Image (tube, rainbow, N blue to C red):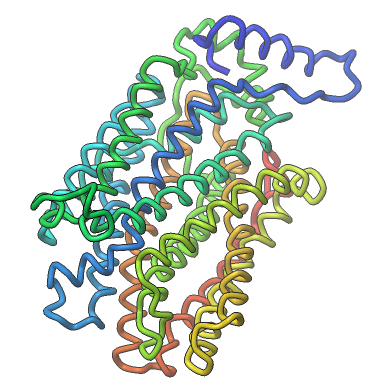
Length: 480
């Protein structure tokens, strides 16, 4: 908990966590979450997928309309993947620096700068009519955006070992809710002059048919910026004396030994130890699989059936991808914390990471059914199975974030630890969309394994990655 938080929140949390360390307590009781601060933090997290995923339903159509491919629809995947990847490429170059900066100047200033960059980039994206314009706009938000690592650090500082599962379970739920709103905005509001001619007349909307969904995403970012500016409390302790007095509590909150809690951030080199690197590598693996799935989904949905997809229009794509966010949010709210309490974080993580295999296998199966029978009830049943499996795959993020938070050498290095993890994820997320969509386009173009070779490659890679999950410690805070 922040030493600069509101007195009521801070005093309550300190008293309750002190009670947990009191020898008179036979069993730890759960510390209540600071609801207002976590709600604001989740709002910041909500904005991220609204902005990033609102482009997914129409990105392939946008590439086609700009005539980037020269009329060859088989090449759409190459350019769509490039646009999706460039954000993570630039983020990978700066995320660790932003996270380390937040360990020194505070979480809130870095978070505000990232939200500002997100809003600016969406405005630029909506006004872009060239490939270079689209790429530059995605670079802006990637370079300025250190939000994800900072938000994970703040969640670690707002929770302790008794409520960490509850706190981190809320992060994928908020992201999923944003992932619901984002694709729906993109799918429903693209080409507003065509869909709502009476509301959006004029040449502007025909010249910039994707500005409306981008502008709506930017407006969400502005609202979030103002909320953080006026209501979010800084969570990074600023006074050394306060840090020392809280050191025992910090050690308990992060599940690290008290003698590992120092007064200042550690060097980057000291993070390159197995206790930190094993969770980070596992995070990178599931980020790879998640990004491959999200990059392939809209491409698979929009590609004609005869070329290996389902031939959906942007509205259908946005609606179905939005459904994932709704189902994900509801099921994670109900099941995540009970599953962690019953089976443990490692067991849940291993099971959820393994669901990527059947998810990818359902892509070619669904296309084969669509080729034989068209878009019928069986296709929708298979898509529903994939959606439900995706919920479990997404739970793996809540699990691994607990391991990463617990691996931080001390609280003042929590930002650097999360920054290292997020930099790793950003690198693989920069590579994965372009790789996955290019493999999709290449295998279709050359009919490798009937156009399904991309799925065989991904399934094989995921099987090997499952072995890395065994290296995690039995629970967050323990050594492997």
